[in-house]
Image 1: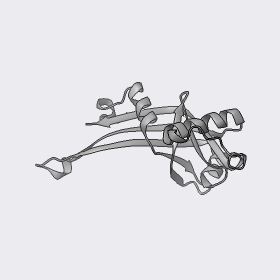
Image 2 (image 1 turned 90 degrees about the vertical axis):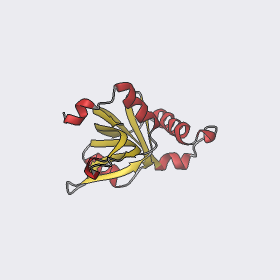
Image 3 (image 1 turned 45 degrees about the horizontal axis):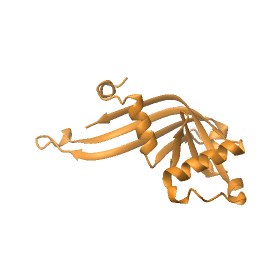
Image 4 (image 1 turned 180 degrees about the horizontal axis):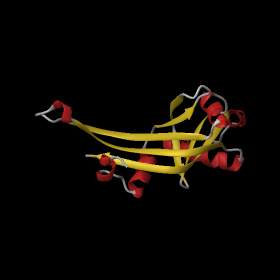
Length: 156
């Protein structure tokens, strides 16, 4: 474990708070040439898993079908903490969570609706009364990330 991580490790409750409140996460997959492919996404943290929604087709979907190992990152940046004696010691207040996991596409239509309702509740609760058109449901994919390893750190 990194030295700073030992001193500034988030507790499980704090990690859950970051995952619940963060508006944007970044999912990393591996492309066909072995390079990382990182995409900002909206997501929900539910039942100790992460769920990401988007189109049913695309590079991230193709990548995770080929290799289901993914990385996921969220962060909250706070204020810059200047060191007026040494510019190199200037720091930033932050909280971040890094996840390694395995991903799969959700096929169960009931789970898919449940997750989409959770996403709407998180990002646009004022639209929670609306239903999802069937055509949109067919074009929407849900990625489920089973968390294998999760760490969080902070600085303030």
